[in-house]
Length: 84
Image (cartoon, rainbow, N blue to C red; front, side, top):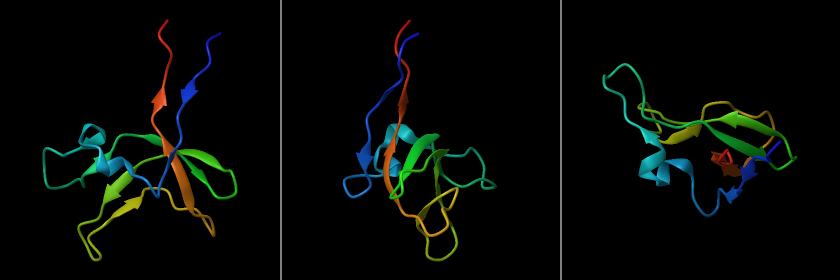
């Protein structure tokens, strides 16, 4: 069985919304702009799938879809599956 390749990107270097190819722009006004699903790692080592959403209410910024109680996201990655 082939291994999944993960390249972690520190949130201090970039976030998914900084890469236009990772952003999904909705076709209507009912959904927010969002990133594709990525995996996120927190300062305690928790790893989950997540995505970034652009909030259209104050403070008009991008947030992680799933919050982490008392944990900060430190890294994220696009899941790259090996070729078969």
